[in-house]
Length: 261
Image (cartoon, rainbow, N blue to C red; front, side, top):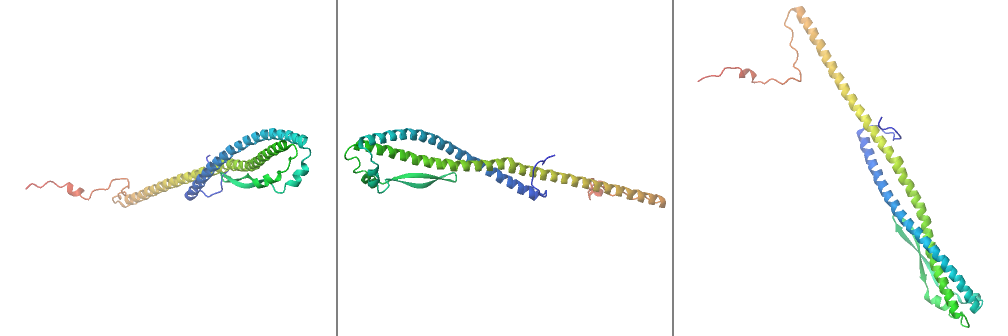
């Protein structure tokens, strides 16, 4: 039987069938849009994963070089930690948070805002006695490491957000595809089957009514024939059937002979 399976509890009418078809069309449109959104987010997610892997490999190499540079600076200039603590008064690298819209999802993006004045004044006297070149090399290496770390933090944050959004979107897509749309389709099949059954019942009812009318008409004619036979009069003529063609009003005049002048 059509319409089996989970469906909505609705009364089978033409209006209900029209409403269910409209809801089915809306569900199919929403499924298509969510599917496209999931594909766009998945494409961006894969790009972010690729960039994270590249930055992690780059970060490992940069931190290795930075560790060696710090060791070289310590060997050439001695302990410079106290000089850094005394000279640094303001951050030379600042982070500005912005948002990027990807298919309706707001992803945070961290941008580096460098303060050239603060950076120039912080290490103006560091390494002046000895090891200035090694200190500058160490500073540039760690600055590069900080830039990569900020980029990596931005990608990691976007990675976590996209992961949650993609999972939620895929759950909605699967729910619409495997639950909502089949339920609407089963409801429409049920309504159509019930309407067809009602039409067949109405047709059968009309046929039965016509049969009963013909039976009553036949019984009436038999009764009239019996009465006419008992009274010895001419039997009444049966009523013209509706299926017979109507007689022409000029039929009697068509039988007259032609007049010759």
